[in-house]
Length: 361
Ligand SMILES: Cc1ncc(COP(=O)(O)O)c(C=O)c1O
Image (cartoon, rainbow, N blue to C red; front, top):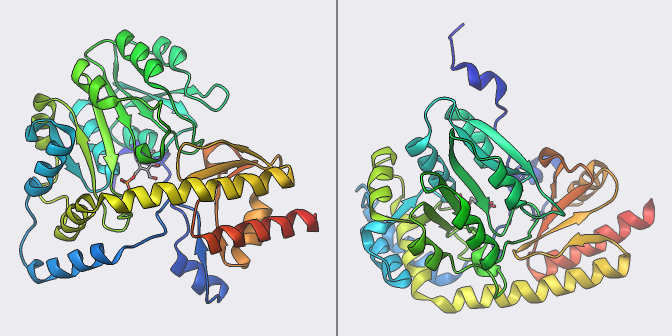
């Protein structure tokens, strides 16, 4: 028997939302709708065109530092290009931050529940993970502060949060940052930033004021490039330089770089997706209200539903009918599930099936 790293005996692999292809095959279905992974339901033609155009270059490695794209992001945020770093999805920025800061037995503070990748990757890196329960489904920043020790290296904040969809305001984050010791990295994960309301933090300003802040954003959600894997971080020049030591040299492929450039060149697409999502959320909220089903108002493109009883049976019912949602038992919320805002026809199917299920019980 080979001897693997001991910590891996205690770690379960990340379980992703079920892919459409698997559900089609397993249940012999022709049409399957996936509302499980907070993806964007649109793939604009201009992005497909940009990717196809890049195909002729796939014999060449991509630009290691995503230079052209980094310039675009630096312009957009009015920062130095050396403050920008890209990841193979923002997932990889989480890994890079951990590889940059964590020595064995250092501590990382996360909320519970929150995006699972922080805990998983921190443990893989040998960190001790301190979990601070949410309060009323929101981050409890005071208790997170109280959890800081001289071993704390990173505090992860998903804002807006996944899976609750709640968010922290500018003043809440600002007060928090003013109290966190400067040698602790505060990882502001803003994967759903573009969907958030107006009083959402101006993290660009906070990052300027607090040198221990990294902002992580992604092209997977509102930009619709989840399948290509690209996200970015913005922080100070020194930190980017150190993170580049742990970054895979060719971590962002050519297609992803080309597609990201194309979506940045067409801001109308993002506006359209945000407007559409707001409208569809209203439709879903109204239907849930009518059914008396409790949900957490969401600052994102998904809605988390408190079903008040175990959701396994509901999940099985949905999946046999070709609809994939996300039960939240893996987050310690067995009575909750999460549904991503999809196309109108997908949302209608979700509501119809939910009604049918509720009626049948
Ligand atoms: C809070 C949060 N952060 C990060 C990610 C990772 O996104 P990606 O790696 O696709 O950029 C997700 C994906 O669901 C998320 O919900």
